[in-house]
Length: 495
Image (tube, rainbow, N blue to C red; front, side):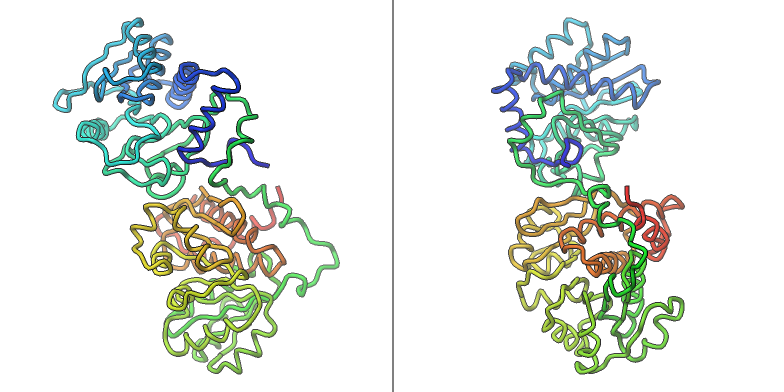
């Protein structure tokens, strides 16, 4: 079930929600600003209950108006409040002027921002400079204000979105506020949850400003958060007469010389999420060694297409690319796999080989990281990261099937579905082998007859949650194989 906690929007949709609230329910921008200020002050006091001194950086738009209203609420509750005005007051719209008047009536000190002036160390800084309407590089005065905030080193609460983050893409507009926490209003913004924005947002709370729930049915979100509970039905307990044939046979094709570990990790991951059988087609030199510490994996030294055919005929799903390389052997394996109709998970060098052929299929899941996505679209990884939603849409249009664009705020998209976004995971997962484990997880789920789009979303979610559990022992130094016990545990979690 979709809720305000899972639906994700861009600026255009948020503006439409505001318009509907005003037209259909007689809400005004001033009323919403008052609610935003109160909600933000409530959150500030919950998050930092000992805070007594608050400095609010206000811009000259409605985000600044929200900051004024927070300041007015804070003063009323007995906090010491100062406002630093960034930009000209004369350009305020009506609602922001009303909010500014409320601050003046409450005798809150308001000072023009000056980068050179010393600022007393407040308990909390509030960032209310720029909101969701900013999509261009920031002006010099705003950049100076951000530098000032960061130098003070007090915790920062951003209103709606950290100043300098593009609400639609997560791109940094030259520089951005590193918020300790962000309270966003009306709905979740995509830029807070993917791209660089996720690194600047801090703890995130979404407040609907008490807008009527009816209006949300009239505005299509751009994505939805992936939650484990939404896919719990696929993890329900098996009947007592279950046998391994009902859980499918995964065939992993990969492990060129020097890269056997990639295929090995994908294979065990598939088993850990419940696949019945897993075989690996790899170089002959690896076959006898690859499963030494996991004998449940069936390993086959494959050098010819005839040998590969015998294995592929038994496959429920094929994972292609983990440690595959781009040698003559690699290309031969790739081309032979492509002749088979079974669903496929294409990763790593499988994607690099695909980028040379530009093939379109519906019966596969592609799992690129930004660099591989860039090769698929003949662009740069920087361009991919500037607008990840656009990138995954282009990959899906060009190559078909389901695409998983990996990275912070991983996205999952198939045709005619709402993109899924995973906001779980952590920096400790930025290490060798994590992508191979993800391919195995998704392949193991597909083997159990879970539809491709659902398997991709569930797989990304399980993988990220397992990473978060493993990270409790420390992010730095975490290995891909550390996820295995948690994958098993999560795969049996049905609620």
